Length: 309
Image 1 (cartoon, rainbow, N blue to C red):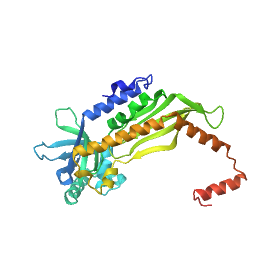
Image 2 (image 1 turned 90 degrees about the horizontal axis):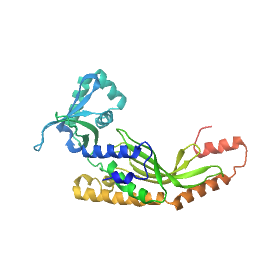
Image 3 (image 1 turned 180 degrees about the vertical axis):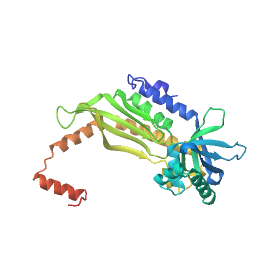
């Protein structure tokens, strides 16, 4: 679906194409299940490796999930443990911790969405990567790429990817324009327009699209104040906790609306006009002079950011 949209944006290492292949592979293996804690059993095996067993229900067979570190942290939070204590008990008292977590699962009933990757291993054993609220909005990495790649391709900026990766917690990508450049605060300070993206499918961050200004002398980037941030539980808050009651059709429509918003905002952040506005603010800031001694400047800064003397 996205393969043809890397032309012209790709770097010499194939970073964007490789990242997109990973996104598509993960989307094809995605397994999202609505669960109640009494359905689940938590077990800790050798060397602290944890598993979740989801009991057979509604014609579905019993499923076993290996639990990654991020999901273990969410299980700890859901059951009231701080992460350091939970980790120590996993390795030093695995049986006792398993029993206690299962007792909490059974008595303090909660509804969650279990996010996993299906494994083609013939064992019906999968990878649990997140245990999030049942109000969690499933706006995933492929949704974000769908929103931004087309406007980037259509832009006059002539983009190239600078950084990009996917971890167990999040995806991030940064682009730089080859053609939209300008002098920064000084004549020799050449700047280039940039776009940044990030998302977490597992509750470790929001959907973000933001403008970057790159300093070409050292290729360091700085974020501007032009930034869009959409939390994965925004709709749940706005709808007074009714997100989980919506049909898949309604949720898809909500995602489509966000895709369109991100598309339009990407076009704006990618424009020459918005880049020139940022550069002009930098020039004006450079011309501002601070009168007084260094001691006075330090004391005034302390007052602004509320530092003690």
